Image (cartoon, rainbow, N blue to C red; front, side, top):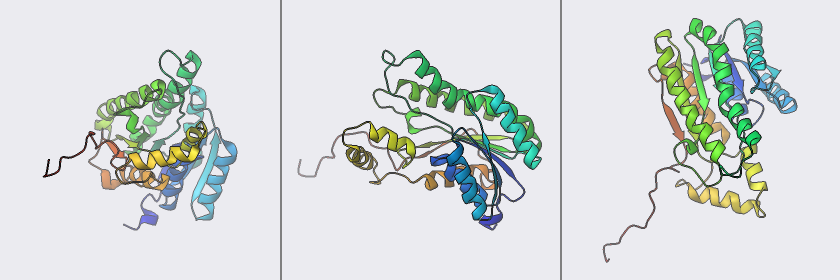
Length: 266
Protein backbone atom coordinates (compact mmCIF):
# COMPACT_ATOMS: atom_id res chain seq x y z
CA UNK A 1 0.00 0.00 0.00
CA UNK A 2 1.28 3.48 -0.90
CA UNK A 3 1.73 5.52 2.28
CA UNK A 4 0.19 8.54 0.55
CA UNK A 5 -3.09 6.68 0.06
CA UNK A 6 -3.11 4.62 3.25
CA UNK A 7 -6.00 6.62 4.73
CA UNK A 8 -7.62 7.71 1.49
CA UNK A 9 -11.36 8.40 1.83
CA UNK A 10 -11.07 8.28 5.63
CA UNK A 11 -11.79 11.12 8.03
CA UNK A 12 -9.89 11.79 11.25
CA UNK A 13 -10.69 14.02 14.22
CA UNK A 14 -7.55 15.08 16.08
CA UNK A 15 -7.82 16.85 19.43
CA UNK A 16 -4.85 18.86 20.59
CA UNK A 17 -3.89 19.00 16.94
CA UNK A 18 -2.58 22.56 16.95
CA UNK A 19 0.82 21.83 18.48
CA UNK A 20 3.20 19.13 19.61
CA UNK A 21 2.32 15.48 19.16
CA UNK A 22 -1.23 16.26 18.05
CA UNK A 23 0.01 18.49 15.25
CA UNK A 24 2.45 15.80 14.12
CA UNK A 25 -0.38 13.25 14.10
CA UNK A 26 -2.66 15.52 12.09
CA UNK A 27 0.05 16.23 9.51
CA UNK A 28 1.07 12.59 9.15
CA UNK A 29 -2.49 11.32 8.73
CA UNK A 30 -3.12 14.13 6.27
CA UNK A 31 -0.01 13.24 4.27
CA UNK A 32 -1.32 9.68 4.05
CA UNK A 33 -4.68 10.67 2.61
CA UNK A 34 -6.98 11.26 5.59
CA UNK A 35 -9.28 14.25 5.76
CA UNK A 36 -8.45 16.01 9.00
CA UNK A 37 -10.45 18.04 11.51
CA UNK A 38 -8.16 19.63 14.09
CA UNK A 39 -9.95 20.37 17.35
CA UNK A 40 -8.12 22.75 19.67
CA UNK A 41 -8.48 26.06 21.48
CA UNK A 42 -5.19 27.41 20.07
CA UNK A 43 -6.62 28.94 16.90
CA UNK A 44 -3.46 30.50 15.50
CA UNK A 45 -1.37 27.36 15.80
CA UNK A 46 -4.27 25.20 14.63
CA UNK A 47 -4.76 27.21 11.45
CA UNK A 48 -1.00 27.02 10.83
CA UNK A 49 -1.14 23.22 11.01
CA UNK A 50 -4.14 23.20 8.66
CA UNK A 51 -2.20 25.37 6.21
CA UNK A 52 0.79 23.01 6.33
CA UNK A 53 -1.45 20.02 5.62
CA UNK A 54 -3.07 21.79 2.67
CA UNK A 55 0.30 22.89 1.26
CA UNK A 56 1.43 19.26 1.29
CA UNK A 57 -1.66 18.31 -0.73
CA UNK A 58 -3.93 17.18 2.09
CA UNK A 59 -7.39 18.23 3.23
CA UNK A 60 -7.91 19.75 6.66
CA UNK A 61 -10.06 22.16 8.64
CA UNK A 62 -9.84 23.70 12.11
CA UNK A 63 -12.55 23.73 14.77
CA UNK A 64 -11.98 25.94 17.79
CA UNK A 65 -13.13 24.19 20.94
CA UNK A 66 -12.52 23.72 24.63
CA UNK A 67 -12.48 19.93 24.88
CA UNK A 68 -13.27 20.07 28.59
CA UNK A 69 -16.73 21.30 27.57
CA UNK A 70 -19.20 18.59 26.58
CA UNK A 71 -21.14 20.78 24.13
CA UNK A 72 -17.92 21.83 22.40
CA UNK A 73 -17.00 18.16 21.98
CA UNK A 74 -20.42 17.24 20.61
CA UNK A 75 -20.21 20.16 18.19
CA UNK A 76 -16.72 19.12 17.08
CA UNK A 77 -17.88 15.63 16.17
CA UNK A 78 -20.91 17.07 14.37
CA UNK A 79 -18.58 19.36 12.42
CA UNK A 80 -16.47 16.40 11.29
CA UNK A 81 -19.60 14.65 9.99
CA UNK A 82 -20.83 17.84 8.35
CA UNK A 83 -17.51 18.30 6.56
CA UNK A 84 -16.66 14.75 5.59
CA UNK A 85 -19.81 12.67 5.99
CA UNK A 86 -18.04 10.04 8.06
CA UNK A 87 -15.57 9.49 10.88
CA UNK A 88 -12.94 6.74 10.83
CA UNK A 89 -10.19 7.82 13.22
CA UNK A 90 -10.22 9.67 16.53
CA UNK A 91 -6.86 10.74 17.91
CA UNK A 92 -7.14 12.21 21.41
CA UNK A 93 -4.04 14.27 22.21
CA UNK A 94 -5.29 17.27 24.18
CA UNK A 95 -3.40 17.48 27.44
CA UNK A 96 -1.95 19.82 30.05
CA UNK A 97 0.68 19.41 32.75
CA UNK A 98 0.45 20.92 36.21
CA UNK A 99 2.89 20.45 39.05
CA UNK A 100 2.15 19.65 42.67
CA UNK A 101 1.53 16.99 45.28
CA UNK A 102 -1.92 16.09 46.60
CA UNK A 103 -1.42 18.69 49.35
CA UNK A 104 -0.10 21.50 47.18
CA UNK A 105 -2.34 21.12 44.12
CA UNK A 106 -5.31 23.53 44.18
CA UNK A 107 -8.66 21.93 43.48
CA UNK A 108 -9.18 24.00 40.34
CA UNK A 109 -5.85 22.83 38.89
CA UNK A 110 -6.69 19.21 39.69
CA UNK A 111 -10.03 19.64 37.92
CA UNK A 112 -8.41 21.33 34.91
CA UNK A 113 -6.02 18.41 34.42
CA UNK A 114 -8.75 15.80 34.80
CA UNK A 115 -11.14 17.66 32.53
CA UNK A 116 -8.68 18.11 29.67
CA UNK A 117 -6.55 14.97 29.97
CA UNK A 118 -9.32 12.51 30.79
CA UNK A 119 -12.85 13.85 30.62
CA UNK A 120 -12.33 15.26 27.13
CA UNK A 121 -11.61 11.73 25.88
CA UNK A 122 -14.85 10.54 27.45
CA UNK A 123 -16.75 13.39 25.79
CA UNK A 124 -15.19 13.05 22.32
CA UNK A 125 -15.58 9.29 22.29
CA UNK A 126 -19.18 9.45 23.55
CA UNK A 127 -20.18 11.37 20.43
CA UNK A 128 -17.73 9.71 18.03
CA UNK A 129 -18.54 6.07 18.72
CA UNK A 130 -21.90 5.99 16.85
CA UNK A 131 -20.05 7.14 13.73
CA UNK A 132 -17.05 4.88 14.32
CA UNK A 133 -19.46 1.97 14.62
CA UNK A 134 -20.53 2.67 11.04
CA UNK A 135 -16.96 2.85 9.74
CA UNK A 136 -15.43 0.13 11.96
CA UNK A 137 -13.07 2.86 13.05
CA UNK A 138 -10.22 3.35 15.46
CA UNK A 139 -9.53 5.44 18.55
CA UNK A 140 -5.97 6.22 19.65
CA UNK A 141 -5.51 7.99 22.99
CA UNK A 142 -2.34 9.76 24.09
CA UNK A 143 -1.29 8.77 27.58
CA UNK A 144 2.27 8.87 29.00
CA UNK A 145 5.01 6.77 30.55
CA UNK A 146 3.82 8.45 33.74
CA UNK A 147 0.89 6.07 33.59
CA UNK A 148 3.43 3.36 34.55
CA UNK A 149 6.02 5.20 36.64
CA UNK A 150 5.97 8.69 38.04
CA UNK A 151 8.11 11.59 39.13
CA UNK A 152 7.63 13.61 42.28
CA UNK A 153 5.19 16.47 42.21
CA UNK A 154 2.91 15.53 39.30
CA UNK A 155 0.01 13.95 41.18
CA UNK A 156 -2.81 15.21 38.96
CA UNK A 157 -1.06 14.53 35.64
CA UNK A 158 0.00 11.01 36.64
CA UNK A 159 -3.49 10.19 37.91
CA UNK A 160 -5.08 11.38 34.67
CA UNK A 161 -2.73 9.28 32.54
CA UNK A 162 -3.25 6.14 34.65
CA UNK A 163 -7.00 6.61 34.32
CA UNK A 164 -6.75 7.09 30.55
CA UNK A 165 -5.30 3.61 30.15
CA UNK A 166 -8.26 2.27 32.12
CA UNK A 167 -10.70 4.15 29.91
CA UNK A 168 -8.91 2.89 26.79
CA UNK A 169 -9.17 -0.72 27.90
CA UNK A 170 -12.79 -0.32 28.97
CA UNK A 171 -13.78 1.08 25.58
CA UNK A 172 -11.74 -1.59 23.80
CA UNK A 173 -13.73 -4.39 25.39
CA UNK A 174 -17.08 -2.58 25.23
CA UNK A 175 -16.86 -1.86 21.50
CA UNK A 176 -14.77 -4.73 20.13
CA UNK A 177 -17.85 -6.53 18.78
CA UNK A 178 -18.77 -3.32 16.94
CA UNK A 179 -15.47 -3.49 15.10
CA UNK A 180 -14.07 -0.42 16.87
CA UNK A 181 -10.46 -0.71 18.01
CA UNK A 182 -9.21 1.41 20.92
CA UNK A 183 -5.54 1.74 21.84
CA UNK A 184 -3.22 4.23 23.47
CA UNK A 185 0.35 5.44 23.14
CA UNK A 186 2.62 6.25 26.08
CA UNK A 187 5.50 8.52 25.07
CA UNK A 188 8.57 9.27 27.11
CA UNK A 189 10.08 12.74 26.86
CA UNK A 190 9.18 14.41 23.56
CA UNK A 191 10.39 17.70 22.12
CA UNK A 192 7.12 19.63 22.34
CA UNK A 193 5.84 22.95 23.73
CA UNK A 194 4.91 21.07 26.93
CA UNK A 195 8.56 20.15 27.47
CA UNK A 196 9.64 23.70 26.69
CA UNK A 197 7.20 24.97 29.32
CA UNK A 198 8.51 22.50 31.89
CA UNK A 199 12.11 23.50 31.15
CA UNK A 200 11.24 27.19 31.44
CA UNK A 201 10.32 26.68 35.08
CA UNK A 202 13.94 25.78 35.86
CA UNK A 203 16.64 28.45 36.32
CA UNK A 204 18.75 26.48 33.83
CA UNK A 205 16.40 25.22 31.07
CA UNK A 206 19.20 23.52 29.13
CA UNK A 207 20.00 21.37 32.16
CA UNK A 208 16.43 20.04 32.02
CA UNK A 209 16.93 18.96 28.41
CA UNK A 210 20.27 17.38 29.30
CA UNK A 211 18.71 15.45 32.19
CA UNK A 212 15.92 14.24 29.93
CA UNK A 213 18.37 13.09 27.28
CA UNK A 214 20.48 11.22 29.81
CA UNK A 215 17.62 9.38 31.49
CA UNK A 216 16.60 7.69 28.23
CA UNK A 217 18.80 4.68 27.37
CA UNK A 218 18.79 5.79 23.72
CA UNK A 219 20.47 8.99 24.87
CA UNK A 220 18.04 11.50 23.41
CA UNK A 221 14.47 12.75 23.57
CA UNK A 222 11.86 11.87 20.96
CA UNK A 223 10.60 13.96 18.09
CA UNK A 224 6.82 14.33 17.86
CA UNK A 225 6.90 12.68 14.42
CA UNK A 226 8.21 9.45 15.98
CA UNK A 227 5.20 9.25 18.27
CA UNK A 228 2.86 10.14 15.40
CA UNK A 229 4.16 7.16 13.41
CA UNK A 230 2.94 4.80 16.13
CA UNK A 231 -0.44 6.52 16.23
CA UNK A 232 -0.74 6.12 12.46
CA UNK A 233 0.13 2.44 12.73
CA UNK A 234 -2.55 1.85 15.38
CA UNK A 235 -5.12 3.75 13.31
CA UNK A 236 -4.32 1.73 10.20
CA UNK A 237 -5.37 -1.65 8.87
CA UNK A 238 -1.86 -2.88 9.71
CA UNK A 239 -3.03 -2.98 13.34
CA UNK A 240 -6.37 -4.60 12.55
CA UNK A 241 -5.97 -7.23 15.31
CA UNK A 242 -4.70 -4.79 17.94
CA UNK A 243 -7.07 -3.39 20.54
CA UNK A 244 -6.83 -2.54 24.23
CA UNK A 245 -3.06 -2.12 23.97
CA UNK A 246 -0.75 0.62 25.19
CA UNK A 247 2.41 1.16 23.15
CA UNK A 248 5.38 2.71 24.95
CA UNK A 249 7.40 5.08 22.77
CA UNK A 250 9.95 5.97 25.41
CA UNK A 251 13.48 5.29 24.19
CA UNK A 252 13.81 2.59 26.82
CA UNK A 253 13.02 4.97 29.68
CA UNK A 254 11.12 2.40 31.73
CA UNK A 255 13.67 -0.40 31.26
CA UNK A 256 16.39 0.30 33.87
CA UNK A 257 16.07 -0.96 37.43
CA UNK A 258 19.06 0.94 38.80
CA UNK A 259 22.34 -0.20 40.24
CA UNK A 260 25.63 -0.92 38.49
CA UNK A 261 26.65 -4.27 36.99
CA UNK A 262 29.39 -6.20 38.73
CA UNK A 263 32.57 -6.86 36.82
CA UNK A 264 34.29 -10.23 36.59
CA UNK A 265 36.97 -8.98 39.00
CA UNK A 266 34.55 -8.21 41.82
